Length: 93
Length: 93
Image 1 (tube, helix red, strand yellow):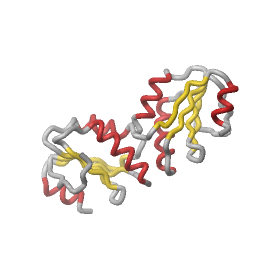
Image 2: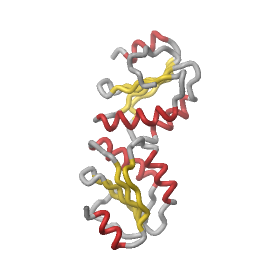
Image 3: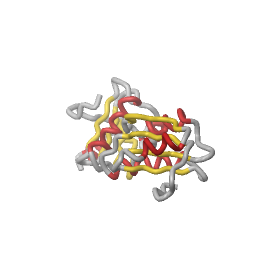
Image 4: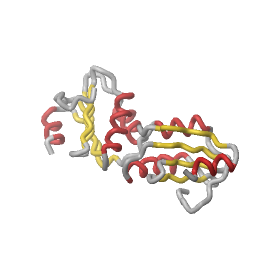
């Protein structure tokens, strides 16, 4: 599920989340593991501060955003991404 | 609310939560700020890994425990404490 080797494709949700250690990113990982079911997938990167969730049957954007907010982590930016060009712009940074 | 100079008194809830950086303890702090109202109070210690919530009109133990669990942090131990002797044993470690 959190296999970062998997390639994210639109539609996707992209979040910039303030994470300062492996404990922070691990917490996001656990919450997403509970709330994102296969065949959907996600990746969490402490290095880029990006959380990406994608797949054909995603939970509603607002619902998933609320779940992430309940971790207590600051969401600096969030975007519902509809096409792969925009996704590439966001995740290649 | 998160004034650690305040003295915790029973009844209280004491949690041992795995926190590895200030971002971890900050996340717990934000969630408790939202869910614990005055005159109740709480303290979060990265050093001792202890989260203590106390006051005369606490939320239900299971409800507050669920809120903390939703941060994605591991709760190693949790206890609803009814008397000050037991509280002193737990928080003096």
